Image (cartoon, rainbow, N blue to C red; front, side):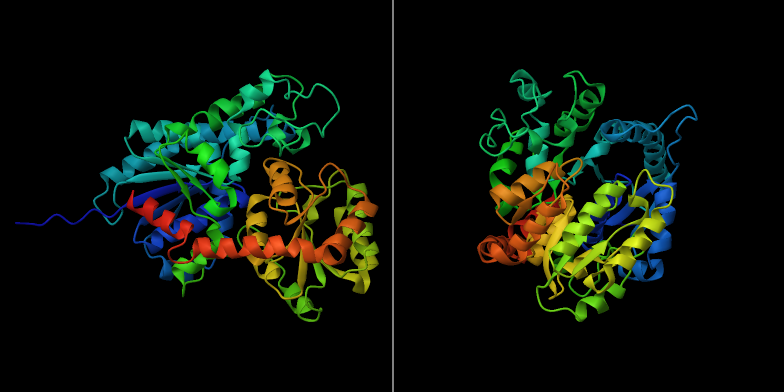
Length: 478
């Protein structure tokens, strides 16, 4: 009698098409592949093509032979549509993606069921939490378990679950210009968060803002329909808030920092997601420059793959860095300058003015930079990936947040974890100079105590027997 082959678990993963969202989901995908899952990583065509161009695919498939990158059509924006700023732009992107994801994912799942070849039918779907609404509908239609990975901090996600209280208490929309007023209606965060620390989606003019309503209804309230919530954080960092989220979900898996967990679990294998050279080409010349600098003397400056500046902000930042007298490494994208016809001319001028005071590059291998002995501080936008990478490397931060969860992250960095300073809603050269001096000299001894304590907790979480290490095993078993 012919024996039935055991069914290999096959997980389909869908990231939101942005570097800060792709990296953690790709790390998780590699970990699942390493645990003998078949993995399908599904992206819009443009992102798919950029991934293939930026990665050494033969080497990747030697490490992960059961890992497949597939594409779906790019979202089509009508010619009459004009890009809108801020939350509306995110809202538009999610809506256009949703219209593509439903049919593409459905067709893909059907094809897996029909095939009798190497690829097994999908047994699980993991998607970025921003894509929950369209993906969970398809998952329920096909009766396949769905797990949501939120790439934000747990403290920010908890704020997303409390907008009715914020509106009821008059905290949203803001009734006056007092941005330092404490917000007291979010359970567990009563004495922590000010108005200016709320996630960017709450900076609205009216309570029935359509983009906010969509975000809450389709990106947050839909999440508890998932079989579980996966968070790129660790219990020891955000335990009280993680416990609050646990009341809304059947299961919560804290498996962060994912970039370091993948390194620990895969040991002799190099994680592609741990490199910065996906989607963006990195300039590794900065590592040689760092080798020539004194220990803990350099301030690393990077504001991520999305944030943009005006010319005036750019020069305020530069003057503040130069005036502090510390060497700096600044990773600055050419497309990050807005409202100017010749961004390359501005960058060229800044490089000429910088001279031997520092180094400007287009994109840096951030994880390698943060672990370099010359780095003494990180001037960051407070994106969650960057925050976790800095925590794990034991580097204190100056936070200049702009969008999304960054406002919350910077508040926790400065006032809860006490591992850095918060410079939100300001871009002044004298303040920048003072904060760099405080970070690198005047208040360094005090702040490094907290930095080293939390670094130790992060390393313990991902080692064998640690909370995140064990939680990944639970996710794999479930």
